[in-house]
Image 1 (tube, rainbow, N blue to C red):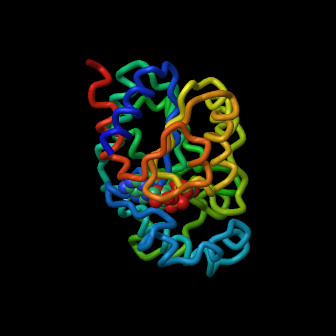
Image 2 (image 1 turned 135 degrees about the horizontal axis):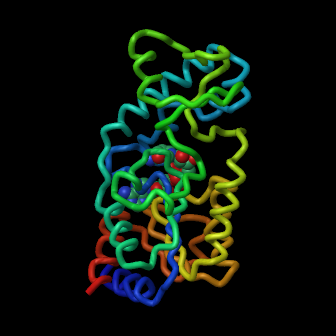
Image 3 (image 1 turned 60 degrees about the horizontal axis):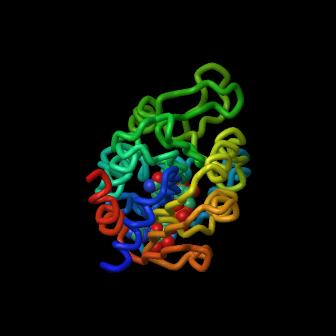
Length: 253
Ligand code: CNA
């Protein structure tokens, strides 16, 4: 591990424009389960139950979806950033951070103090809700109050349309503007650091792939192997917080 940390620190020191690409493994140490690890969300729920077209077409699916989403949101609401999130704040303080492209919907990069304009949430956020018909926006906490008071499936106040958290479900279109920003940063960076992502969810995983194609260096810190490991300059199968904290420790000295 010491050699990996030393090499990682050196690569980070030499970089000038760093793109962080984060996934669910970034937040497991904040108490939020990921999708694919044992005990993760998909060991309890079946992902195919929550495809976007099913949410649109079935009241029963919407009820189940809000049930799953409530459980997840309640955990995220009280979660605090962990040492890995704080290490990314250190990266921003060093002036090297170009952007954070995150697949996470948990608001923890914001809570860690990173600048909102540097955070691109390509899979959206669990902290707001929109009407799929008229686009009216709601604060998630307000919708959660309705659910907690016994409403099983909330609908839009203005047009009675279907409400959904502003997260991207399987089969739902990605936000084109955010994806375009993410790919632009991937072309501009000279180092991409992948943190806690299985890199199997597309098109999100095309962001680090694009960075490598454009000549950027690649560091992957993820407990399990990923399909991009062979392309990386450094692969660290360790805890994100342990590894990243040590890699950025002496950055500003
Ligand atoms: P994933 O497919 O669940 O993969 C997570 C990866 O993280 C796995 O390969 C694990 O080995 C690794 N991992 C878990 N904990 C740690 C740790 N402490 N240190 C190092 N590695 C760790 O998640 P991805 O993000 O790759 O998949 C994309 C999905 C997951 C996106 O759509 C997210 O919205 C979604 N998601 C987000 C959250 C969140 O916002 N916190 C939680 C769960 C799922």
